[in-house]
Image (tube, rainbow, N blue to C red; front, side, top):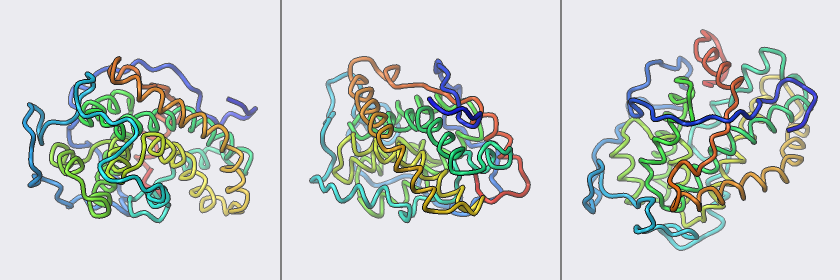
Length: 300
C-alpha cells in the first residue's frame, strides 16, 4: 500500500484465536453514544425456529449441507436496495463514528486530502477487507453466529469490539424495520446485545435480496466513506477533495470487494479460517486510547 506518509495502517498477519466470551457485555461505556439506544430491546422473538442446538434457532451452516445461496437473498433481488443500504442517511448510526479518523487527526497523521487518502487506503486494505469478507459470507448464508465469533477473533481491541456490536445492534433495528426477515429475527434473539456490524450488514443484504458481492461493496465502501466524511467535519476539509479521495480509491475498492467475495465462497469448504484476518495495529491502539477521551466529536 502506497504512500510515503505514516498515517496508513500497516497490514499485519493476525492469527485469530477464539475469544473466551464473545458475547459478554462490553466493559466500557461510550460517553458520546449519539445514535445508540442501549435500552432498545432486541430480546426473544416470535420467529418460527427450525430446531438445532444454537440459541434462536438453526442457522445455515458452513458444511455445504445447508441452505447456502451464493447469489441470492431471502427476497427477490432489487439492486436499488444497495443504494438504500449504502446511503449514509440510512439510520444505522454510522455517521456518529469516524473509523479512527478523529484520533489520526488529533495525532497529526491526517491533515489534508493526501494524508486522508493514505489513511483510507490503509483502512480499506485491513479493516475494510475483513469487514467486507464477513459481510459477504453472511450474505451467502453461512452461520451468522460462527461468523460473529470469527469477527470477535479478528477484533483484538475491546473498544473496537464494543463499537462493532453497538453498531450491529443499531443496524439490526433499522434492518428489521426496513427488510423484515426471520433470519434477522433469529440473530437478534441470539445476540440481544448486538452481533458484529459486518455480520448484520451481510444478513441485511441477504434479507434485501442482494448478492454477497453487493454486501462486500457496502462494507468496503463504508470503511472509507465514514472516515472521509468525518475528516470534512474535523478539519473543515473541502467536501470536493474528500469525494475525490473516494473516487481515486474506487479501483482498489473493486478489488477488495472481489477478494472478499472469493474468501466468502471458500468458507463452505474451509470454514471461517478462510476469511482474511488483516490487522492494523495503529488503528487498534488509537481506538483504545480514543475510547478513554473525555471530550470527543465522534463515538469512535
